[in-house]
Length: 120
Image (cartoon, rainbow, N blue to C red; front, side):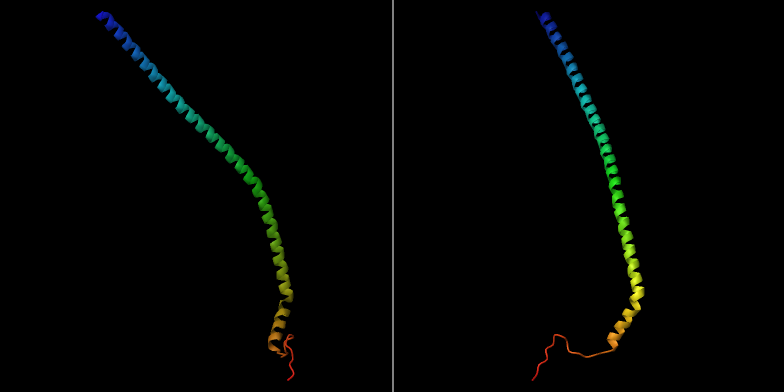
């Protein structure tokens, strides 16, 4: 029986080694699949990121044009107003200076319109 037990034990040990090899292969397979899944997920994330960046650039370029047009129009309006002010200054400037000097140099003392004359 000892030879039979020894053969049975040897068969069990062989079966255990074979099972360990199978388990090790399964772990290696699982590890490889996890790595592959991670790299595939990273690729998908990168593609999605590129797509969203392209959409953002398109959105930005569409709306930047609108802002540029509005800014250009407002700059034209400002330039026009500045020209009008400059022309008005050139036309009325000397008269304004003359009126100010006259008001300062020609004094006409008068009571203020809100002052009430009191008779004593």
